[in-house]
Length: 233
Picture 1: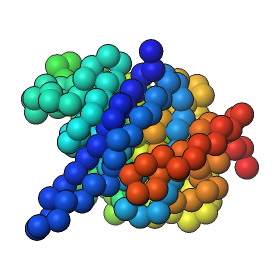
Picture 2: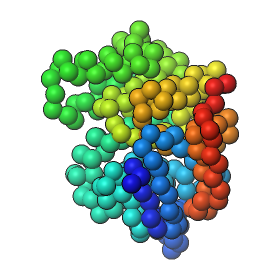
Picture 3: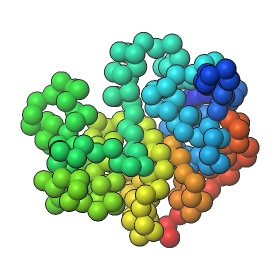
Picture 4: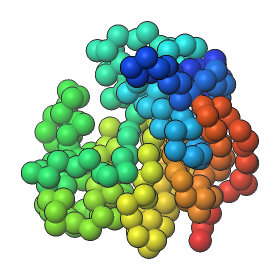
């Protein structure tokens, strides 16, 4: 059984007198430990699919099962608890709280879990070390470069040890050197920690780091490319 199973998955929004359907009757399996890139033009349904997988939004129709859990129809409180265990989200614009240090930003998701202060400290320190930003733990976001901010955001995404990391244009606001470093870090999380990654990107070079690329067009899968191994250059 795949870790992520989508069957007849659709999402429709009502805007005025118009129904907008960014995702229509989609079938998709994502295996545990896979690194999947989603590509396609704006409005093709990429981010909608990502938000459904992350439990941020719910489908209008169809089934979405993750590790045997049916997300459609799950109550808001149960969905929030499930998301804190299963999902780490990496945003394009980092979404760090400017008045908190890097350490405090990474610690935030752990405050939803019952654990000691010492346990939280150990998890935060490990996450910051894994992404190579431990020496900036006491810096505020404004004191960090874009690449460093994204490293903090990735540390925040992995600090709860989620099964799945979803990333929405994780290199979209970065220069080429920083983007390459972030993609190499995501590959490490996939290869060394076995994290399942689902990434939205417009950049074909970034998509080449993934092991599989799916193209969405008007809410439907257009084509798929299998890649033997992630890019290294």
